[in-house]
Image (cartoon, helix red, strand yellow):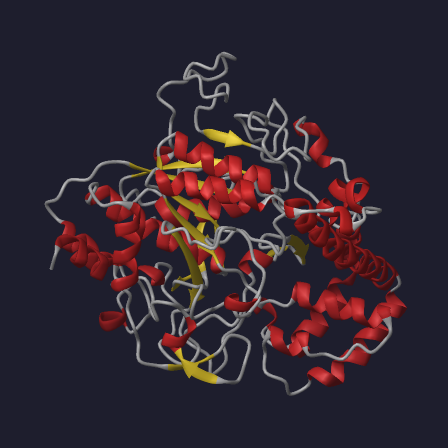
Length: 543
């Protein structure tokens, strides 16, 4: 479940972590830029009642709360973020001395687990299945499962599944390369698929149900449609016309993609200098992150950071949710491909050890080859009173029944009490309330939060609106940080309990994501509702 993959089409950055889906129904008035902060009762918009929360907090003092943004990196010089970036008080920049003795030299604002020592950072890594194939091919390709026990047998089974998916993905990648490199083949396949979409509702589910037959080229074009399907197109007819005009640029972008994530020979990670096969390695990477010309590397993390804590009241861009926050940037997520378990585990430990009280993780994947190490890091955070907020993903799937990682269930069967999983809700108090792309789950998705058309910070002092559970998770992390700032005696578990009990519960039947089926909104998550800052503050105040 890659959450961040970015391709450029007609000058637009289209992120799969922020896939923009049009909501059904008649045209609606433009949403206020800060819609997610508004109040459902007063404004008839499914926001989090943030102004009401601050009214309740008037006269109370707060203390700074560190929020670890474990993501793709953050533009620490952004005009709306530079004043809220965490500074390590024990480190002097650029003196090549580990003054705080934490193993990370010159870590003044955080750490980049994907960077070379000078901060040069690779943007593309392999899909997780490719990573597993490369890491374990020699170890398990010819192994006899009858001679394996315990963890080795589990790894062998995982390797076999990953190998199968890698080989399938590699073939699909080759078919995509052939499809997009030949315009005649591309448009012939597109014309084959067109009739199946006419009159269908505007949703990703319509593309998923296309019958591509046995022709690999048609299957590849179906895959392309899924990658470029966004709100900007508004209808399938517009999409088709835009594809025709944009084909030369689309061709270049997709051909570049085919050389990346299913390529077992990618060497981007080599610059880091670590051993990818050693999940227990701790001290590698860089205190810096150099944002390339494309700005894609830090795009996602910068947007997430702004939702949590962009400087409030400075008359710039956007206001974050928490007003006394310090953003710690921890880079583990490449622009393309999947994050590595060892980086995730180390990122969590780094954030915990350096004072984070809330961690946001807007990423996820289908395999976790080093889950014991990630589990140990989550448990480490739990034992040290740190709340972890995680995005559920944008596949319109039931999270209860899919493999998705990281997740709070430990291998021993117990569940982390400091871990929250978040779905994406829209502004609309009607059947379109859950975003059509959002994952959901009555047992595993804790609550929903505004994550659709959310304007926030992006690199180089810019701003943009993205959509996805990647935006919903930091909304929850921001409210959690607000509580931990004004009520510092609350534990992580108590904050989670308050957030779950204080949700706004609209009594609505809604469309289950990417479906025509109507279900109670309350059935899509454990709490049955949307995070609400004002009600959370009331509970914290004992009202």
